Amino acid sequence: MNIIQKLQEKYIQEFSATVPIDEFILNLIIISVLVTILRWFYIRYGNSISNRQKFANNFLPLAMGTVLIIMVVKSSIALSLGLVGALSIVRFRAAIKEPEELVYLFIVIGLGLAGGANQPILAIVAFFLILGILFLNKIFIKKQDFKKDDKMFVNITTDQTDLKEISNLVTGLFPYVELKRLDTLENGLDITYLCKANDIDQINNAQQSISKISPATRLSIIEQPEW
Image (cartoon, rainbow, N blue to C red; front, side, top):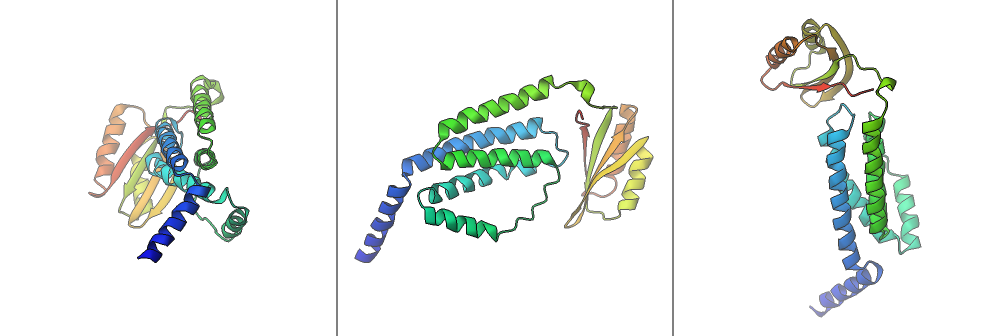
């Protein structure tokens, strides 16, 4: 029992000496709040046509992992060099399909780095400046630099695998149809079309027809971002 107590005391003392527990907890809380706000901002104002909510769920664990890594290695050159060596053999194969997704991941990692380096004030100031600039850019960007023809994104998630049959159905429902994205799911397809509807009746008819593909079929219609 004495050995266990000695080991516990030793590790606790080493941890407290290299990583102050109060600073560690405070940084985790601050970065968690900032990343939660960023997640809401990305879902609300992002232009990505993919499932933004699902993608944004990765923000918090990524930031927490970054904080943990930096807090551990910042006090040890040996650990820092070991981390470089470890990461050099790790290959990430996550598919980043749109540049906007990569931009937000960099912001999350930046917040995690600031938290791990015990710079919460810098993280807070930089975060709100970045969000403010992004928001102003969203509002005041010149619309004449973009092209918008009353088009919309039609996203279909289904357990069916016949792409030709689904495309023929969508083509018959809208006067303009363009396949923009196709993802193969474990059971079915996730398809995004760029379509144009002349009136609300076409959209209503499309909703009813597409829903009949199968009971598991889900339809999402999103206004085309201003690009």
